[in-house]
Image 1 (tube, helix red, strand yellow):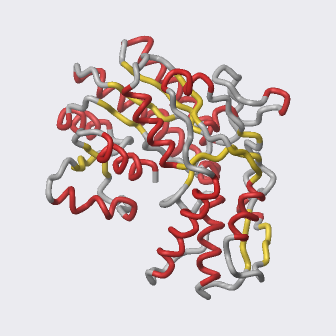
Image 2 (cartoon, helix red, strand yellow):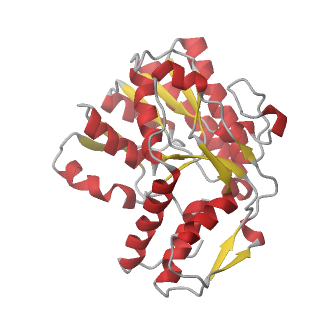
Length: 324
């Protein structure tokens, strides 16, 4: 999701040539609209590589010789990390180290964005909200632990080797193209499938009590561009997030209010529950806003409407879907 929106944003707001890292078996649905530009060699290209394959990273860096690097790639699903913790740790920690090592040994000096996660803060007591950058880490999943490693590896390469690495802890961000393993997106997908009669009017959920601060992915990628272009500070780390906070249950109720169907039953599915959850994710984003002037612009209501309409369009296209 984020990489595709970042490409859209950079094509519109910069004159940069864009190179996306691609594995041979990647799902390209989110970049279908960019493929023609790739074929026409119009500022967009792909280079094959994998975070778990060190030689491919060296080759990709040598081929592209980047001026800017946005490191967004990860095993990014917290619930999946409980089933595949070693893959998650290897991809996110060692993969980040491998990429930065490939850049370090290349002799290039790009501006680098390493994307960690708000999940590094994990379970934060209510009296310590909002979460500022120097709150202690208390990760609540193997994914969150891996992002602690990602965060620290990025800062280490800035401090030890002088690379211009900046690290972000982006809080919950969503919108069109959001993967259906995430709560608000699976809600929207299920509503769209129910509206088209593809599944019975039963919507399955996990934990609805988790409190989140919501941002639109299109605001997030604008923040990432400002991060690397507005006086970048090597070793800096920032919380980034939206301005609207509510529970996952509130999001579900809002999405249901956007549907004409009034017969949808909500059922808690034990398979969708994490063993433990980061249930209070409310950021203090003062540091990043003061440095860049960034503020979120897209309201929560538009984000949710656009997400639901995205899934309506996909369902109406006639594609077959797993219900997740």
